[in-house]
Structure formats: C-alpha cells, structure tokens
Amino acid sequence: MNLRGLVERRIEEARDKGKFKNLKGEGLPQQIEENPYEDPEMRVAHKILSNAGFCPPWIELTKEIDADDARALRIWGEYRAHRKRQIDAIHRGTVTHFAELITDLDEKRDRALKRLETLWLETNIKINYLNATVPSDSVKRIPIGITRRRQRFEREFPRLGGVTSGRYSGER
Image (cartoon, rainbow, N blue to C red; front, side, top):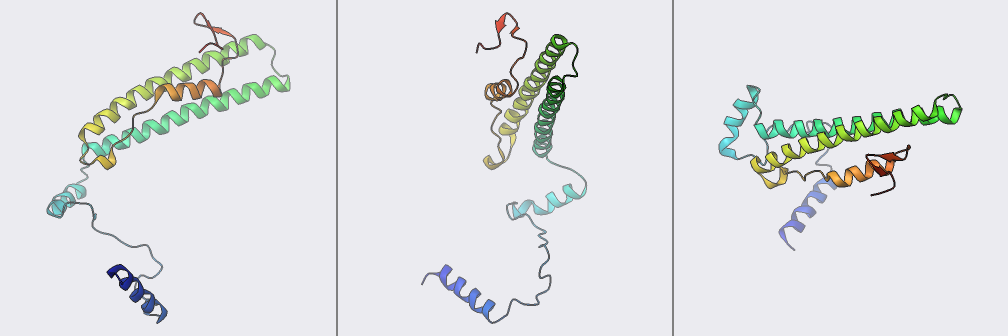
C-alpha cells in the first residue's frame, strides 16, 4: 500500500471512531492566515505592506480589468433592455412614428457598439500590460476577442433600418 492509501485509511478509521467530533471550530469556515503560495521569505514584508493598504500594481490592474468587464456587460444589458422596451412598444401598437423609432434604435445600437469596442480595446491594452508584468503565468489574462464579440453583438442586435455607412446590414 502506498503512503497516500495508508493516510486515507487512517483518516477513515479515526472518523469511524468519532475522533473528528466536537473539534474546536467544527462547522465554521477555516481562518487561513498565510498565503500558501507566497514566498515565505517575503511573508513579513507583504503583511506590512498589506496592513498599510498597499496593493501591488498588477493586482490593481486586475481590478480595473474586472471593472471594465462589468462595465461592458452593463452597456450591453442596458442596450438590450432599451431595445426590448422599444420593440414591445411597437408590438403593443403604441408607436406613432415607426420610422423614427427604427432610426433611433439603430443609432443607439451603433453608439453602444462603438462604446463597447472602445472599452474592449482599452481593456486589451491593460491586459497586455498586465500579462507583461505579473509575477506568475497563472494570473495572466487572455485578451478580448473583439471581432468575435462584435459579431455576437451584431447577431443579437441586427440593424433594423437597412442601410448604414454605404452598405446593407445583411452584408458581412
């Protein structure tokens, strides 16, 4: 029997005998004070910096990238909700200026897509910088596939008015 099997068998025997019952902190989340991946020689320095409110720049950048992702989802969701409200109004027959509404929806669609593309480009710049500065490959990020996201947006929200920028909306 290998060492792992022996350890597992002993743990099972102890559990069967009730040796793990009524332990201090049973059922409570574990309080782990030390980062197991942290260099032990740097532990004290990191603790002092952390207590002083210092955060390494790459962690701050990771937070910015996460905030950018959340903002992009919010922009997408806000346009989705706006478009649904307007299309519901069309179905209810409460729209009197149909052509103007379609034009407005397409203009708002184009503005939302432009905002998203700008945000995705800016986020990719941050991701590239992050990937060049992080201390470990495990925290690197994959850049945003802007073309793929644009195509997904255009599939979900096709233009309703036909022609834009000299080309038909059906052309890709």
